[in-house]
Each structure stands twice: as C-alpha cells, then as structure tokens.
Length: 93
Image 1 (tube, rainbow, N blue to C red):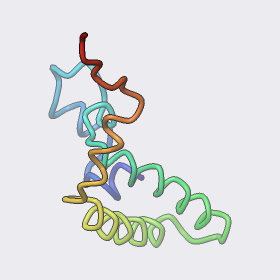
Image 2: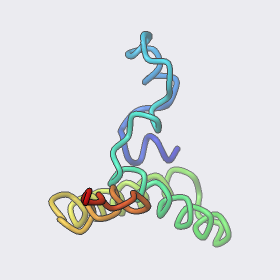
Image 3: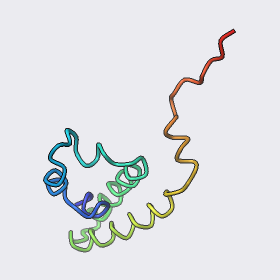
Image 4: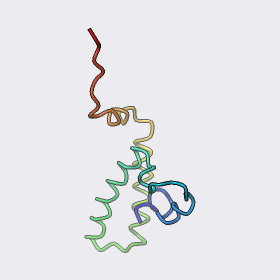
C-alpha cells in the first residue's frame, strides 16, 4: 500500500514493467522517495493504531506523500545526506 501511496503502483506492477531490473522499486527510488517511504511507514502504523480503514489510509498517505515530496524536491540539503559518511578528499603533500 505504501508503494501505491507514493509511486502510484504496486511492487508487482513495477516488476512487470521493469522485467530486466535485478532490484525492486525501492532499490530504484531516489533519496527523497526513501525518506518519504520511511515517514509513510510511521504514519501508516499510527493510522492503523487509530483503526482507520485501508481505503482512508491510502488517501491520507497519498496526500502526505505529495506534500513531503514537494518539500524535499529541490532542497539542496538533501545532497548533504548523499555524501554523509564519505571520507573527505585528502590533498597529497
């Protein structure tokens, strides 16, 4: 359901349209998509705890995904996460 809320297709549908890919939809996702997926997992868990039906959860998750993606796309700070953990280039003496 989270894939549908964010990508608009199920994992199975993605595999059918990308038969040559060795990975899955999440392996091909951008950093922004992965951040949103992590957030959607938490939101979905809370909505389940509240007893919200799946159809309503999907609508809410989709709206949240759209809002989060709009906030993240173009945010230059995301680039900092891409390089997190990389060793700085050392200048030779």
